[in-house]
Image 1: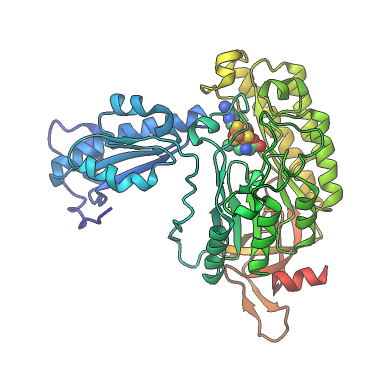
Image 2: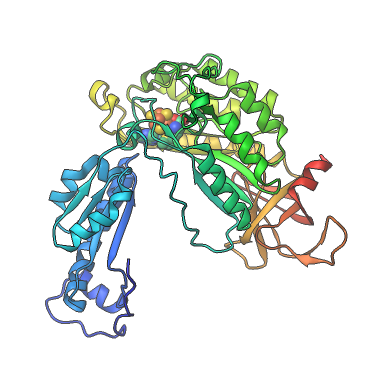
Length: 484
Ligand code: SAM
Ligand code: SF4
């Protein structure tokens, strides 16, 4: 995108006949500088797609305004899952869209832009079996950032009956470990203190790029879990990756998301327990507490197997913080099924939860099941799940009052410049006064904590989403681990 010189002053005259959006842009957005606007899209729920259709309506007015005012066209591109899913519809329904690029077509963007420059619509939605963008290191736009995400795999082979991901993101493939390690080292050199490994199923990671590991046996699944595909032998697995990544920088916290609960062999749990810089925080997406619904969802486990995994995880990693995803009102969900989900939330008591109403997508459930839970029932059940989740999370977090938590400082709190905000090992937000604190090494004068510092905070109060406390001292991740 080439920057443009700033546009004319805000006090532009509004000419008769301009649409209300044109008038809005004339008055309030006189300096739209971009030549190209690319929207990265998500298709997982209908709401996400609806937001893009709405945005396109606004952009249509902007595009017309820009052409009229600057005499040069504004190019608009739709990228990602919605492009993959709705290519034809986007191109035909929205004549203003110039570029449509699916999740595996980003390398083709320069060519697509060139085609668009010639005045034609350009599209590429080919899915790849091996694209991982391994050789493209992302540019960090926030200099001095404390946290970063690193993509380690793409796609999904699980085919849960409600989920669009396997269709928009394609087959599961992993990025070679060497390129992941290179990126994490670069982030460490830049001073980043926390890296989150990203993927649709991070713990199904399987790097097949090194020939000598291509026939290694497949690690077992979590007990009582199954898959719709046959065990995949060979490759370097998630435990190996986690081991290597966590050795790069002892002062860098490592997290990962989103894992699938089926892929938690003991060696992964042991590693998380042993390494001081791998956060004791696991996301275990359950989706439902009813075995009947889980079967309809094709999740490959029962309520009992899931609960057994939760107990095993808690035995293996004492004090682990748990989070989960739930869907309210899936096809055929009865009140009894819903109550089973309520009771699972109570039994497990998660620290963090992501709860959604079922949104029908063009998947197996669309073709074979009936979306028969009325919208208002879905919403009511969702609200009930949110209420129960919050009550339980508040209890889980209240148990931390009086404890000391190691907080990685991210910056000033949004609500008050007199407070700092950061996260504890369990990924829960912690707020504390921005006061001078001593250094744990004892060799420095009192100083204020900065973003990227680790501060030991004594928790004084808790809600379902936030902890508050008083700072005790600045320290390091390694020193803090040695004290425990
Ligand atoms: N791969 C992880 C797993 O299955 O364990 C979760 C990643 S998935 C991309 C993110 C979450 O979106 C899912 O866990 C699910 O709760 C939610 N989701 C997916 N499809 C949905 C749908 N059709 N309606 C509502 N929520 C949905
Ligand atoms: Fe979607 Fe996760 Fe199921 Fe894959 S495992 S289909 S990403 S919900």
